[in-house]
Image 1 (tube, rainbow, N blue to C red):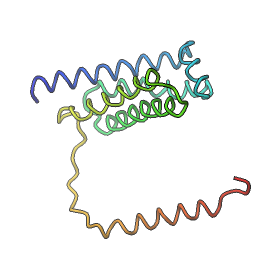
Image 2 (image 1 turned 180 degrees about the horizontal axis):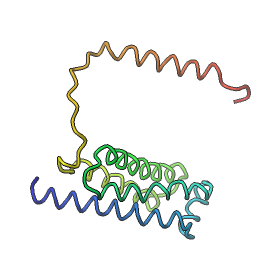
Image 3 (image 1 turned 180 degrees about the vertical axis):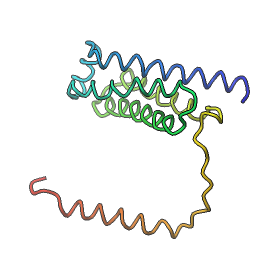
Image 4 (image 1 turned 30 degrees about the vertical axis):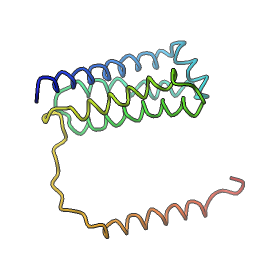
Length: 157
């Protein structure tokens, strides 16, 4: 891996890991800042314990060597966290000052994931090419599940 790519990887990874660790502490301690954000967005404060409890392991896994499967989960969790935060601010009709930060962290998470060295990647699985016709069954089953879910909605939905 080139020196610039290595530096960029560790820069993005360090920022995301630090933000996850700091965010974990802020959430678990329920500091005034995060409580006021949750109040504005209409989320219950107990959700801070759930989110905060997962942010610290995320940070540790991103920094630790090996653990390729856990790293994929950690990257996914960080991306869901940041895009969920950005979307929450957008849906609450808050301006860029509220949603831009989480959006930037989401992009940095993707950059860290894309730049990670081979030893931090999940081993590639060699699969034969998939024929488009093989998508018919899962798409059909998924469509049938959506129809069934809509047909079985409780009264007064």
